[in-house]
Length: 210
Image 1 (cartoon, rainbow, N blue to C red):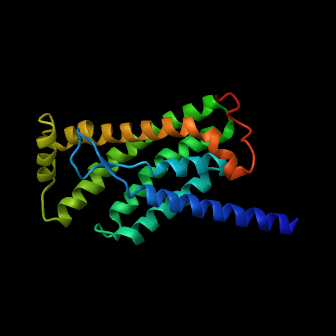
Image 2: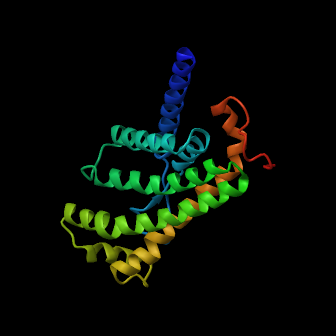
Image 3: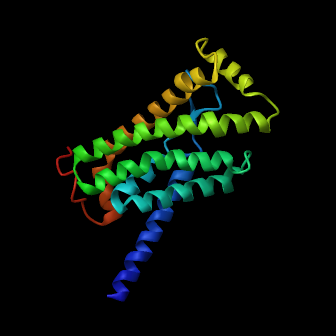
């Protein structure tokens, strides 16, 4: 029994580490979006995190997210004294945690979709709050600017952005909506096909996927 548990723990740790490393590599590929300033770039690093969270549980998702962020610091360094990385971690977890909790209660396609939709909503909320009260003020301070200067950069992209509130509503919230939605769609499409690589067999849920 102890040997079996040890093997399971080793497999769990190695899988989490591999998925974390995959996420960190994927995070290196960044795609700018037309409606947000170029310091907001889209990446798909949450895909391995969600797959791991669905296959191994919510705690695994948090661990994979943490490894992704830490490896990204190792690969790219930190220009924000850890503030940007902390926010990235919290925003990622805000998507992954609700989605995986809902999915783990009832492992079906419907619960996966409901969980991901809930996760996207949480991601928008947490991302908006962190940008308004932590990220944007910190970046303004770090680069000897005012928050209004960052808002002005947003105005160049979208003339309707004229205040911090409109910046959050027209740039930050849509950015997280697009990212969360695209990542969720990809996970829904591929999870059934890749989950057996993690679990060694087809997942007991999502049987109706075609």
